[in-house]
Image (cartoon, rainbow over all chains, first blue to last red; front, top):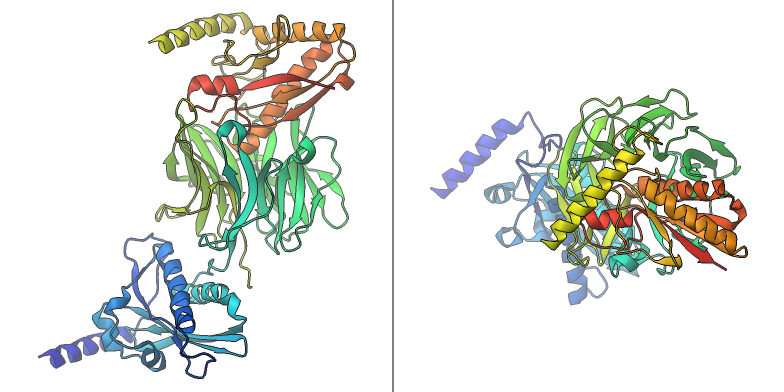
Length: 445
Length: 158
């Protein structure tokens, strides 16, 4: 009886699958996450210390990082390992697909690790369970301490193969760590892996720091620091720790971002009660004034081709979003809905601008097309702002503050992310309170 | 109850200042001055009778009649104390985006600075710094706290 059942299933699948490989539609949100089995990586018997429990554990750790990445997308449903029938080493050679179909897996990840002479070699395969096919097989060699990054790179490769979009797991998020009471808040620059691991603090908290942003082409960061009580835009190399002031402005510079080629910083400079937008070329140090208006012009962000800038201005009376050519010509207001609009930031895909909207005492994170049409509000809350795009333009990370009681009690600031579909809203766990997140580009391109 | 009463009082004062300032310097359209703090709970004194701070309406940097009065007293205090320099610290409330608040608070402190200049104080004696919404005096999430946090504070330097 059971055998017949098996055969039937195989038959059915054979029939179906001739046409379609599995594919995850990420434009619709997470209504129907794809069941995926992530088999623990098995240890190659040729490894040094093959019998060592730590070596075996490494295989499990890597697969659990991959699994956690998939779960966080809301697009995949990693299946419980207890239900796995096939041993990891055998599955990696050639899965018995019908076994995996029985537990409803549609995709299967298997892998192997070899730890020899202080080198870690990781091999993985992605299988289409329904089509009885291998979809990718890749191998990486690295130092053993680098295992986490390899887990993220593997996650990206699988995500790319299944969704047709580039991944975002091998990335980091820089943010402002916050501690202490609100009236004496201590703020430090902090950086962590996209999944919340490997938190490192980059400043000591002696001076106020705000709005760190990654250079899209490397691991430089620009941010606002109140060093010596002079609020200025700084540049920080996170590998060397070297910091320098950007330009020689006789007043506050703030709201910095890099140009898409990483060669310029665009920012606001405030003087005598007027904030305008400037750029500075990091190589020639040439400063250019981009806007000239008696209103507040701030929060500039380049389009990914570098030809346009979106920014925030109250030239119409209250905060609204504008676009202009990168030389400052052709200024156009694009936000016309009810309420105020701030923090526009251009998607790395170029099609959308994410923003913060304030209406009726509530704060929204939303997206609109770069001509202002198609406004969609993704999430509503008491206070939230400062969206930053994932490098593939599918997610936004932002920060959210809770309402404080009479003496400031109950106040928290946390990082959250949401798909641009409006689905899969979730908190990014941080060691301390956190704000002003900025998502890096992929570390390995 | 007591709180409600306070609010009502504030509102009455606000409405009257609105009426007074309506025709003077409406820099931007929309009801400026509608939620300016007019109490003295957070106020300190630079000298007898000289308040150290002025308050602003939501999203505004225009000075109210009461603010101008405070600043005139600060100006005459500075004229009497010629060696004294000040820094004007501009602030916003938590109900606005961080970067816009930095710009707005700079504009508020400069509005106060400009007024001191018109009363004969040398620009060399006045510096300005914006803290945006980073240094609230009242950490509650209430309209009262927000109104106390939208301020420009005059601080003595050496």
